Image (cartoon, rainbow, N blue to C red; front, top):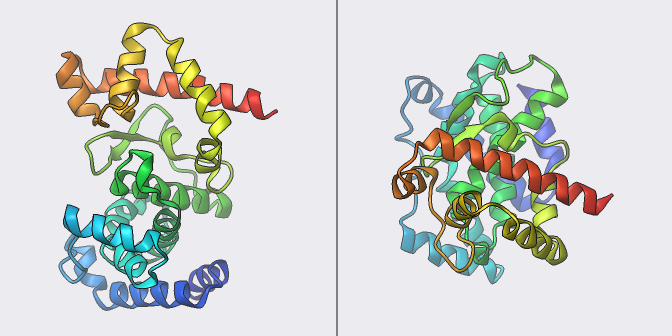
Length: 248
């Protein structure tokens, strides 16, 4: 356990970040047995939509306390996602510790104008951080195929290993931050057949539309959610190959 804490504290050298992590770890350790029986009552309640927006706006102005609030009130999400990996022979406390790093990354890099919910963005960052940790330490290969559903995110979307598995930290964020690449991806989406394009437009809020979950898109189009998931993954693979070709 000590080496995990050492790993975290060395990763986040900023004093404020270290204090936040330590506070969250202390809360978790005090309520250890509560989490093991599936309860998270001791953790702060998730923020309401209005309060989340309020703190996000303050955080965008550099308010450190607002950033801390966003971290603290999303720790339940870390615990929820960490429990998916209990079959990896890594202690739940350790998984929560690593997941907390992903949460902090999410809060630090989240932008309100990206048309994606904070919970969705944070879920991807948390999953990515845990999966990278598992790969790096090679404790045990997760016996999950790329096509098998791991779970569902907070919006009801299927989570697959290939959706969150990365080779480098924040690679997806870095790729999508480039305006040139963003324009290129939009052009590629325009080339899709009408069905695939409509699914991607609805899922990711393109063309000034509101972002929808896989479940909502499936109901709207009268097809299964698993079919939406397969189409989405196929298109994302294609778009990723376009990004890689552009970069290299």
